[in-house]
Length: 113
Image (cartoon, rainbow, N blue to C red; front, side, top):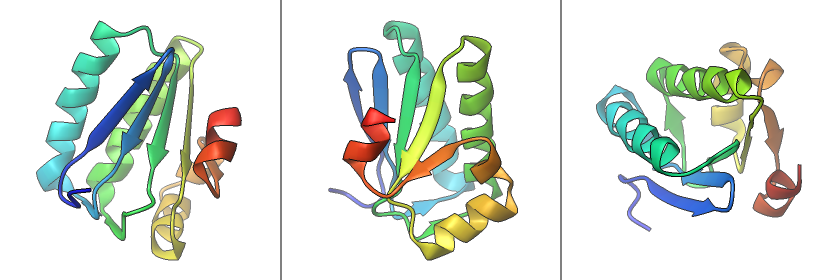
């Protein structure tokens, strides 16, 4: 996997977003526009963010997560994440994301949840 790019899996009504090593203002614009297109083209009611390879995230990443959370909540959808390491979890906690979006240890649990 290229650790600078996003990859996506759209399966049925779930979109899994595999995040790069760094989630910052430089690449969050691409994430937003890519997911806008995917959400328009597919009936998605669930987004799962994969933080397995992510070691850095800034406030832009928090902003994207919040906007996707609000978008899914408005349509009674769900957002979750998995694979966040200690540093990313700390950022999610500081940004209050962990109170809105449920985190899981692994992919299987996140897809079941």
